[in-house]
Picture 1 (cartoon, rainbow, N blue to C red):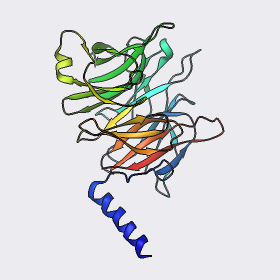
Picture 2 (cartoon, one colour; picture 1 turned 180 degrees about the vertical axis):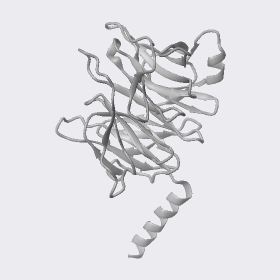
Picture 3 (cartoon, rainbow, N blue to C red; picture 1 turned 60 degrees about the vertical axis):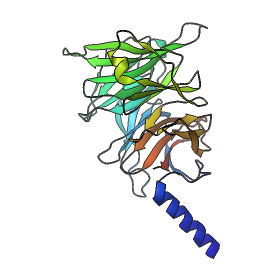
Amino acid sequence: MIRRLIATLATTLFIAACGSVAPGTTAQTAQKVPLAGTPNGVAVRDSDGAVFVTDDRTNGIVMTTHIGEEDAPAFSSYARIPAVEGERNGLSQIAFAPNGHLLVEQFGFGTAGAVYDVAPSGQVALASDTNSARRRLGLLVLDGGTFLSSWFVKEGSAPAEGGVSLITRGTAPRQVIERDIVTRLGKPVGLAIAGDALYISDQSANRIYKVDLQAARAANAPVPASDVFATVDAPDLMASTPDGTLFTKCGSHAVCSISKRGRTTVIADGFEAPRGVAVDVARKRLIAVDRSRAPDKPSALRVVPIR
């Protein structure tokens, strides 16, 4: 009894002191919230902690409030993205704009890549007239008028070639200007910002690159990704905390944190197929997508306490 009490007290003090996950945390011990469908990207609304998830099965966005609470509402449909006839569904990252709208990327499979704008009413409009041949994955909103998109193109058996572009909304309806700012990537997936640094996860290179965002925006030509910040096995979509800690998939069944010095630590494992991650800063938790590989088994969101 005394031994169990000491262990409980030690765990409580550990979490209270640093807010990070105790060593040995698994996806089974992290809170599991079942989610029907085929989820990929996830975002958290700062004001109330509502969680929004892209669902490839319906080509839409689902949401819930007060995730993980006993009386929390179930996931409900928030918006449907127009399906492209003859193409598979595939929605990537999702992010909030300052006006409360959601931006979401459509992967496109080489023919229908796009960025959509979803109003709080659920109304969907094409946010860009960008290159539809680019397979879009990562999305990062800088302000109400500009955002970043990671993408790659692939022709036949040739290696994928990708980059990051800066997209600026024009004054005319649907007018958007896309300018490449980072190149020489293979399959760039996740994007995150900490201070003046842009971090890009390149899944095909098993690396996370660091780029001076302001310098890249000011350069006359796209800058090559060359500064390796961390080595990670098959990183995916990313999220970051205000202090610069990054989070992403690592390996086939785990989610890692990456410190400001590039040190990688597994914070939760035992996932079936981790995908998108989102940081809920106010509530000190990470929301991670665990996508089911079996058609008869539901997917889930994992709720992991963090610093």
